[in-house]
Image 1 (cartoon, helix red, strand yellow):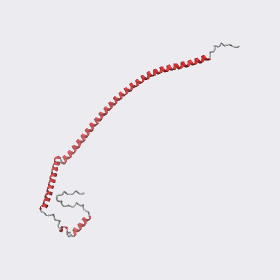
Image 2: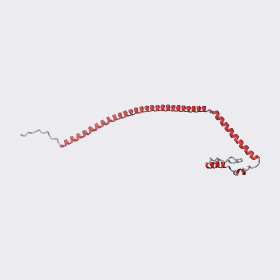
Image 3: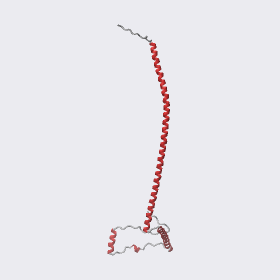
Length: 195
């Protein structure tokens, strides 16, 4: 038995294609509308979110500045305290050294008046030495005679006794420290410095 079905009238191919076309356009329109709505919503939210971030950054910056100022003021206070301690320590060290020096001077019997007296004596000795030098120069020129060389007799060797010879040999074996030879004073000229 054959069953017969009622068939719906078949739509034409044109109408089906047109409906598919319209459905695609509708989907595109809906997605564009949704996208515009989301963009508007996102731009409003992004703007609000950006302003929230700016406000948060400003508050963090303000807080950081205040914390930094506090730390700087603490550091300045510590530095000034350290400077005060160092200056106090230096002052106390200076005072203690000066006290020790004064105690040593007292024990040795040396004070400032002794130094002034020694300086005065040194000046007097220098003045006397200059006067003696001046007098000796005047004395030699007053006679009008040039100085005579030492007598020839002093240049001749003296006969020595046997005990003196033995002592001379021993002293010759030990080199003596040399003293600079005395030079005759020059008239009117200062002595030349040693080289």
